Each structure stands twice: as structure tokens, then as C-alpha cells.
Length: 505
Image 1 (tube, rainbow, N blue to C red):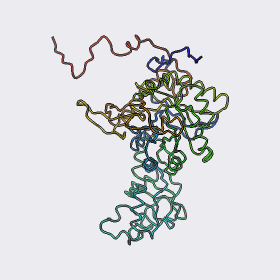
Image 2: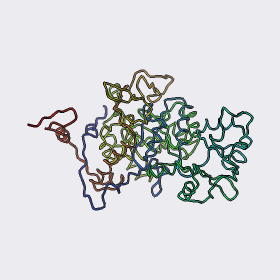
Image 3: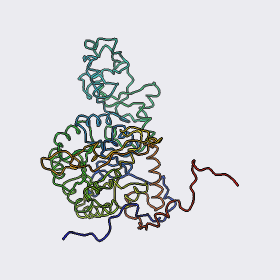
């Protein structure tokens, strides 16, 4: 006989947080939203963390380079969609990684005897207009000068016979900083000498890094931005369980910081095989999340397989119709609660903490806070981010309103059959599991994310907690009836808006 669960499958809208004691220091400005992104052992720090608990979904209509940079500036991370060619996805990763802040390791280097044609090719490959000229053409070489796009006009020179040495600014004419200088000191030099960039060199004149004027200004504006050890923005990438042996090496080379297996249902042997292949080839140096699951069994399977984080959710997304088509899934709140219990039990037994991500089912901003209270370390959002100008889709007009196109990975438009792959030789989609739709255009990501985070911090302050970990331990939660859901919104009044005309009598 089938196994029947006694409790119904619930959504976030069926719960409310009950306020806790708010002390004199429990103010929103002091709330920390820092959270682990990958697994770690008890007493250790995770290799990757986020400064806000928000990630963007592995979707064509959501996670492109522009949104990845915008979200990283705010403290979260995007997972560039994998339903495209390997070369195209790698190019998107490189585009994000080429946008840097602070001390920057030079990845655009050229020799003095190279031609200007080679300069242009390198510029096209890296996207950088400023290049270090070194004695060996490598980043660790002795700095001989700098060449930029302003040093020559492509239409006025013989690109194939003109040498870099004849057009570069030589070292003796450069203003440089010495290795060990602070970022503040470097920027003082930049401002004093009216520079756009400052090369940092060691005692032997070897290039150590660059400091760019625009990066320092940007860092001051975005104190929560997430960066790698080379001061480049963090970015993730979605992969599948079919072509990972070709895709992963290319994306590692491009600079991806973390991967996630993009699948509608992750409790499968194919996800285990994918993780095992990555571990055998790269060890723990390459980070990989897995999912999606909706119960403790699925979590334990992927955690034991070696996943760095586990994603929760089947059928809860606004454009997902998996539940309608297949009759599988679970209410997102119930799934998050059960997986969190399994995560805590696994941590108690093994000493390894595997973060969990609640993916889908977020309709209101407060649902994010509920997901965190129920045990999620971070959430993954699709519709939320699809509304912003930085998402890859077009802005269109529908019935006089500005909208953005938004489609599911299982829709006929995306045709991402690998996400719904159940093995075997068959490829392609037998039926759709997502829809093609529109969402209201909401403007810039930074403005909207700032408002959302403000709501989360204020709610946590009302609960008397100052961190996500404390929220998970101390939150008080109540189920609500359908009547109380109605009571929670404006009711028994005519809400004033610009379309209502009132006359005084």
C-alpha cells in the first residue's frame, strides 16, 4: 500500500511569524543576513558565503550576465542558465568575472613585441581595454608598460606590422604603487595623479595587480558585494546530468565559482554520478549544489553523494506546471520544514552542515523570511528577478502596461529537456512542464532588492533576532486560517488610488 502523509502539504501563505521580544539593540540596521552557500565542517568556516540570502534561478529569462553582476553587487549570486551551448554559457561567465573591484589580478597581458592585431584579439577575448605589457607576456612578468584602447586608432595604423612597444606608455612614464600598499593608499595616488588605473609592482618590477578608479568607487557604493580572492564578482552556473563532462571543465576555465545541477527532480542516480565525477576530477575544489528534493530521503541521498548544498522544491514556481502535468511535488513550506529537519539531523550525526535552498513558492517578500525561519539558508527566485531591467528578457507593452517576458525552462519556448531528463537514450521533451508568460516590469534590481531586504530585516527585528541562524532557532510560527489570511490584507474599505474620484459634500 502507498505511504500516506497525515499532514497536508502546506504553502508559505498558510503561516505567520509571531513577534518575539525586541530589545534595545534589536534594530534592523544591525541584522546580519550573511549565510553559508556551501557545506562546511563543525567549527570551520564555509569556503563560500553570501551576504544576503538571495540567489537567482537557473533560467533563460532570469540569470544572464547583467543580472549576475547586479545581484553580486548586492551580496547574492546568480546561476547562469545551462540551457545553451557550452561556449555561450562560458562567455557569460567570463563577462561576469571580467567585472571586478579592488585589487585586480591582470588577465589581459601582452608582450612588447606583439602586434596591435594581437592587442585587439586579446581585447575581444577578455573585454579589457587596458593591458599590461610584460617581458614574457604573462601576468607574473616584469612590467614594461601599459597599452590601452586610447593609444592607437585601428583605422590609422598597420595592425599587423605595428608593435606594442611603439605605442605603449613605457614603465618609466607610469605612476605605480608598491606591493603591500592598502586600497585606500592606492586610491589616494589615483586621485592625486588623476589616473584611471594604478599598476601595483613588487621590488623586482613584477606586476602584482591593478587598482581601478571605477572599482573603488563601486565598492564604496556596494559594501555587501560578494567577491572571489581576485576581487571578482562571484557567479554560479547551472549544469545538467548529460553533458557535464564537457561543460564543467569549460566553465571552470571560464571562472565559475560554483555549479548546481539544474533538474526538476534531483533524487536520482544521475545526480549522484554527476557529483561523483566532479569529485573524482576536482576533489573539493569545485563546488556543486544538487536538487531539487522535497523530503528528508532526497536530502540525505544528495548530501551523502557529496553535494555542497541541496535545493528544495517541485512544482512551486509561478511558471511551473509539473504538479498539473505529473501529479508530483509538495507544498513548499512543508518541503522546507522536512528537509531542514533532515539537514539538522545530518549535521548532528556527521558534523557536516549542508546548506539548503528553498526554490519556488515565494509570492510575497515575507515568504522569504518564513523560508529562512523554516530552516532554509537561502532562497532561489525566478519571477522575482525576471521583473528587473537587468534580466535577459525584453520589455514589452501589454494592454498599456510595461511587462517583461518570462518563461519556464520546461516551456515550449525554452525546451530545456535535460532539466526533466529521466535517463535512457530518449532526448527531447514529451510534454511541457512550464508556461510562457509576462511579469510586471519593476525597474532596477538594486532598488527592489533593497526594499525586500529592508522588510526581511524589519521582520527579524520584530522577532528579536539578529541573524538567520538565530531566526532558525528562535522563530515562533503559527498556522493561519483562510479567514485570517483575508483579515491580514486591507478589508472593509475602499482603497484610495489614482483611479478613484472623490467629491467633498
